[in-house]
Image 1: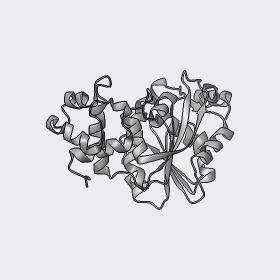
Image 2: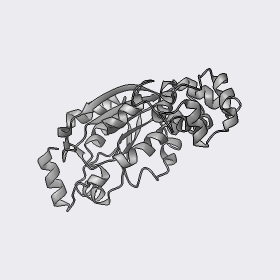
Image 3: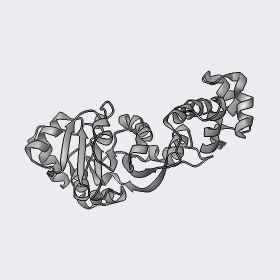
Image 4: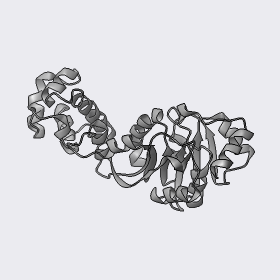
Length: 281
């Protein structure tokens, strides 16, 4: 579907691309196929796609997967996709907000293996990426299109400027299996930012859901005041018992006078366990 064909589709159905919903539509079929392959989608897989758009990536996923369940929030796009019969038979189209929707009927109640593929607007990217960490043990993997700045935060190394709580949580739960940048000209209308498609696979040794929640609380407290020492940042946060800070850091092998951005992910896990008296069930 070329940019001209996209314009024609939108005009025929009385639609317009909404910047607030991040509606910049991919228009390169070959690129869509490349993204499906990069996400590891195979003939035995079922895919939960977030953000159907005009269905270009959806159709590529359907060529590779056994089944695709695709979620779209825009009722106008839903009507247009159905009116023009743009989706293959192995695609189920759901009109819903993926942030609020319960995914359980699919990834929890239908035959897998399941993968998630998403094209995420900025407003929905952070909550969905965080949700994927919780769903990780039930997924074979996921591929997400986000702004490059957010993708950098996910993979930032210890000590890097962009290393933060999001980096820690992702690196404890998943490993990056691939990534590719997409220039604005791959989309219509052309966005002002560069997008990155990032593929992840869950780590078999990832923390439990309860441990991850505990780590999240501690790491957000630690990064709350990046220019302060770790001990001072933790103390100022009010999220942890100030009387335990020195002992917990000692147990985790962390210098309390260091900065949060110098603490590697596994040390954050050890620190959370120290605060919570060992592994959290």
